[in-house]
Length: 429
Ligand code: 5AD
Ligand code: SF4
Image 1 (cartoon, rainbow, N blue to C red):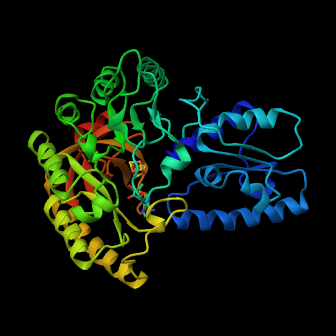
Image 2 (image 1 turned 180 degrees about the vertical axis):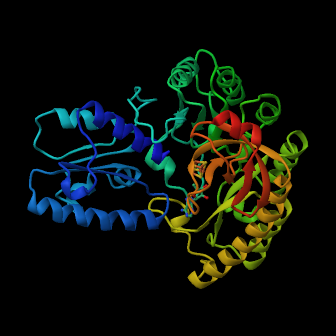
Image 3 (image 1 turned 180 degrees about the horizontal axis):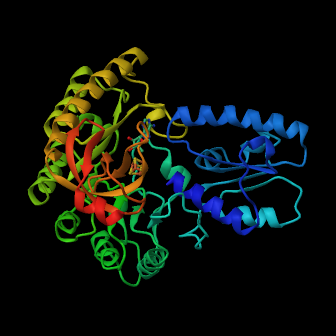
């Protein structure tokens, strides 16, 4: 979501006549788009801000802007703590940046209102073939560790027809893959009036747009993962065989303290439903270790779920107390840092071992790979992505944007290796 917000900030600045410079020291405007999901992001940002301050000391006309969730979480305090900041705005107020830059106001300004779905903004896409499509803003869940509901506000779905129109426009502009974005994508449409919509309906409508070959989305909430969405994966050619289903913990007791609204059994039941209808689908997840009160036994249960599900990959996080959240106030059973690190290492071992095992199912198969460019480690090879969202490094000749069949010869936990089939190589030439 944050990356997409950056694309919108860039698009807006471009329409105002700004262009990017290679180094911040050459800039007239330094704009930070901040994330606050974990403390490490905050700390990195504060260090960058110090650099900008020094630059401004020598170049007083330079403007410094701070947008995003960190700005929203501290609001006007930003101007007291960092008086050299000229403009600050939350993630829902990106459009106000243009207002500020085009006004002749010399005083610092902050924009932190929550609105319904904000007006369309011009976007500068990082990749020509891929577009993010924000389908909703905000989140109505109350996960006790999470700062997002306080920085992005209440959930509001973007109107259905407008979304389909935008996808149609993107397809005409050459986009082949879209990623639908929301904090809880499968809650999409419940708040729309006069006609409610469902996330599965949206998948059908986007799949019907000519030119869109791959549809991804992030993130669904396990509570709202219903059969209609699973069947959309089975029945719609464009919906990729990949689902990111955040687990957070494998212990029902901890899930309850996290206010995740599902138990271990209910989560595994969702996984069984997915595997029943679309057995080949990649499953990825998010896991937090060291939540307050997590005992060794709770952690063992997380390991057990990872063993049982066999994720294709997982993002693993050490619990980070966030200001204003319920979990930040918890004082019982705090997990010491070395224990968190030790659990993290054990978790990563299980995740990677199972991911490597799962990835072997691709060896010997031919997968359609959307070519992105040269391989990062070996420029004589190409790199692309399979429908399962696996990075594939392969030999052959193809142009970025092509979808080529690649014969998979080897698989690790993270990447697949293969050869473009001869037919594709010939046609690409
Ligand atoms: N501490 C650690 N991880 C967190 N996440 C969200 N909030 C926190 C926190 N306070 C993780 C969750 C979420 C992902 C985007 O970030 O796993 O799914
Ligand atoms: Fe945060 Fe939970 Fe909402 Fe995800 S669903 S953004 S973890 S509150």
